[in-house]
Length: 310
Image (cartoon, rainbow, N blue to C red; front, side, top):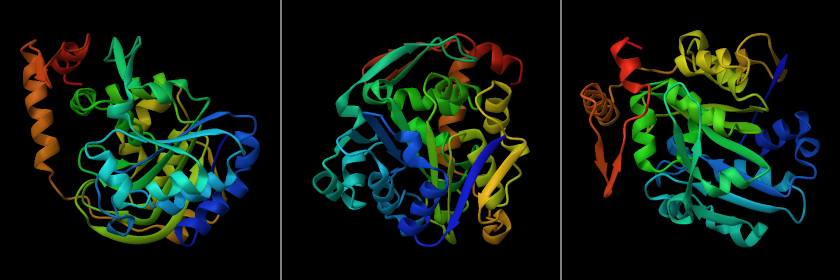
């Protein structure tokens, strides 16, 4: 049985409580190379609903072993600006942590016998760590219905890879998670976001949740914002692939009902849908995509999946 831990309050206090009741210090004991991946999709602050509150990460750092090599990573466009505008650069000196833009640090290709991919490109720092924490933001997603700990991991890939993952949901995302699952996921739902994942539509929820099973955590996150996890394709596929459990989940701490709100999901995101349409059209033709002076070959099963209507 997977456990998901819930606590209410402001970002730091609620995160601290989740880490306490989940026995996080024991989970991370002896780990020397720790990576924390927040969701910093833009320079907007956490109060706008789209980025992880820096106080969530501060709480995590307060629970990490002294002397560990700790790195905070993000690979979305404008990562450095997002770190700066969201107050993350202050953590660098205060806690002696590394803060890196994955695009500048470097990536590594990993072979995978996936549902879609032959290989996946992932930030080297993420692949080299011995404890990976996904510090996600609770949001409605315009394509995947909800984004939390697992969807957050797309930020460890370069943009070219993210385009291919977006256009081949949910299989491609599950391929990525199979390469490197978070060892612990924590979700900032103090101020969530409705309608989509990029544009600010904040809703005060007052909750933080977490656990070692990302599938279970994301299932509970979906319930909190009024989305049936059975209707979230990546959650169900990840569970079927043995990457976690969406059933028989034990809630520890406060109740889901205390924080639940039905968030609006009617927004149509032309940016995301436009990208998906173009890339799927190219895939059907068996073509390649030219991006940043690189030719990216289409992945082995994409055409078959599309032709089968998957």
